Image (tube, rainbow, N blue to C red; front, side, top):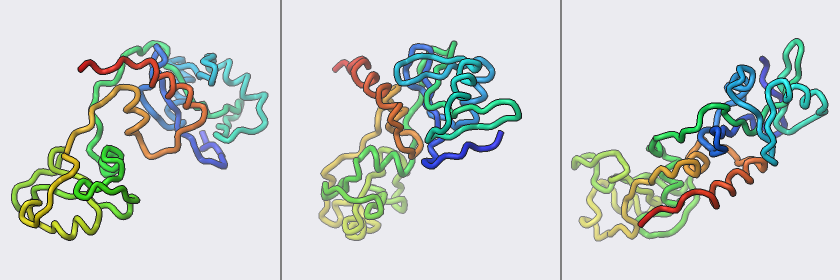
Length: 209
């Protein structure tokens, strides 16, 4: 199938499990495959669901859409924004990936030494204990640091240059569906996903202290 043509080029699809909880964000090709095989239904903003045949019929009545269409020899299908798996009801058991983007997201673009907020291009990642001194590259030893603080600390321990962490290193906890949206690939959240996001926020079980 040819790639959909879209002005916004937003061709990712939010995946819900059987109980309407977000579990993944996938590409349009995988979403179409799940829909065609009957493993998923399309979900609209009012939580109405559509099978592949229903979706094909609805798509044929649309003239244009920002997410684009996929054309086959016999069908024209709108790229679904949200799909719901028809059988899978579990939640993914995973951890937040250790990536630069997730580190910046976790520390909210804040320098952990001076506690000031910066644009991404003005931040670096800093080994609290330098690698030359045996420091590990993991959540416990990596923090975000502004360029001046990073240059001041250089390849030394914070205490060696009179510095102190104002924000201690922590590892973000996987919070089920909310983490899917917070720590997924760097894409723009669709308007059609907002209702699902709001529902997750209000209906998720609070952490027990």
